[in-house]
Length: 218
Image 1: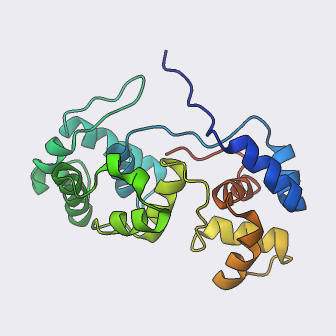
Image 2: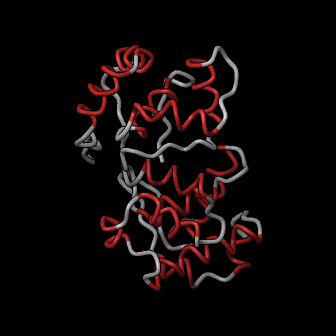
């Protein structure tokens, strides 16, 4: 049996600090005990899955993903699934299209695989990069925009201080809790979130829980 993902080492410090500085977050932390961010897979597999799932339903994405991992030489099963960038980079576009991917997504996955295979994206070097530098490196890949990069930093890299102001869920939650349902501008969101530093990822995660109590897993 695979071991359950560990709690991020900063989580308890973050929830205590956020509870002290923000009454909304204090209520949300108390309302959702015992759950936290969980890292699930390796970087390449996580990003590939994010590309596959863009702008389609969860059900369609799951069906395409299963065909894709078979074409790439991996097999879904218990434990974590690992894709090899070299194998994905070697797949022809028609083979990727045969999985149900659009031509554009097939190109995106090939570009992602080549970034990993060539070392342009090197997870071993990411600890030396601050959040913005890592986002810049990720958006160099076709099909990865800033929102996808920010989600990756939060859910996979477990970076503690990311504030995804373009995220619709965060916009809704902040409007609901801090402005009586009226939308905040990005500048107002950033200003409100200053008090949450250096735990803005954790604050964002709890605000998401106020909209959907079941955590999304990447």
